[in-house]
Amino acid sequence: MEERTFDLTVPVTRAFRGTQTALGVIFIILGLFNLENNTVLGAIQSLGGLLIVTLVCLAQRINKYIMVFKDENLQIEKGLFRRHIVPWTSITDIHIRLMNVELRLDSGKNTEINFSNISFNDNQIIKPQIIDAVTAFAEAKGIPIQDGRSG
Image (cartoon, rainbow, N blue to C red; front, side):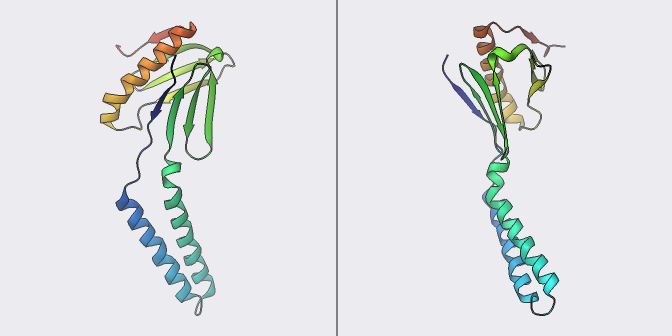
């Protein structure tokens, strides 16, 4: 089967980046001015401003949520450091529910694809595509599927 990729990343708007960057720069400038009179306050303000600017730069990566369906595995990337690779051979069965898809693994742990944190429009457009991809790959690999969306 061909590889399918779904990007459910929440985009970071220009307005958010602009206002937060401006706020961080203001904190840095205030901190530099306060270094003469109150070293501790100036250092805290400067470091706080640097932290805000750093988080703004990383915001798009922090919000990352990507699923890649491949022949040998399912890759789920969330945030900066969470990357979960689930081989199709380790999945015992799949439960499709109204707001999530649960992949039961032979190790006893479960992996979940959650749809509650995406927008209504994405739920209407992308969710059926993801469920179709899960179903197609599961049928190709002989994994049993239970669909519990109807009731």
